[in-house]
Length: 271
Image (cartoon, rainbow, N blue to C red; front, side):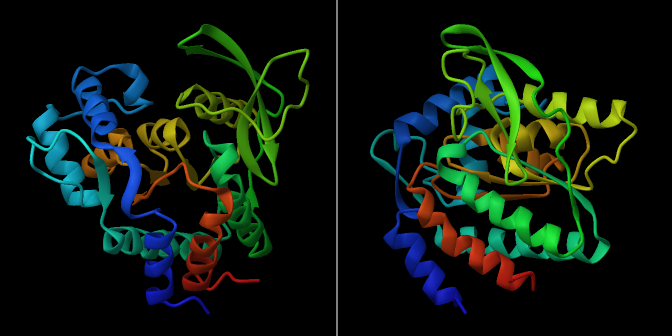
């Protein structure tokens, strides 16, 4: 059994929390772009409130533990591990309720190189508990605007987790998938599920556009997010995202496995 103290130590040792690799410069740039309502950082959230950079710094200080001093403009960001642990506990509560209801769930990631294993373990456990892990729109094409222009991606699933792959005929089935912030994949998946007559997810678990896009459409959503991605935290503050776990989303994939064990243990879903 992984204790709270064990997990706190792991968060700090792996730099999932505490001093993280994300820089203050990266965060402030994202906050400026969000305040300007740049769709690249809104990633599916349509804010109701007015969010300036100062308000975003205050929000991220409250939700993540970063410095609330606007004069702090350089160096490494800091995530409070206590806030990460509290959010993981809230995540476990939502998973336990979904398992009790045998709910239909959708999992998706824009960070397949890092977070696929985390979500796949949740999908396995929820499926074993009787939940339906949804996989609509398999193979569907999605056109996403990137810094290189419009690119076509293909929707796919790995161990029940949705992701996109480059629509590149020279690299068919390239694993494990592409990095994306876009909400278009989750909108495509949810449209396909609705067109087929359901079921629709009672809970969506993911990151980036997968979480924000689903939350904006009214689906209960759990998200993982780094401190340079304010959109999920704004969604949480405005009530369209249920839980956001603050952590560095770019460390080695195996560093997330203790988080999986902790959440599943807390949700009584360990296999």
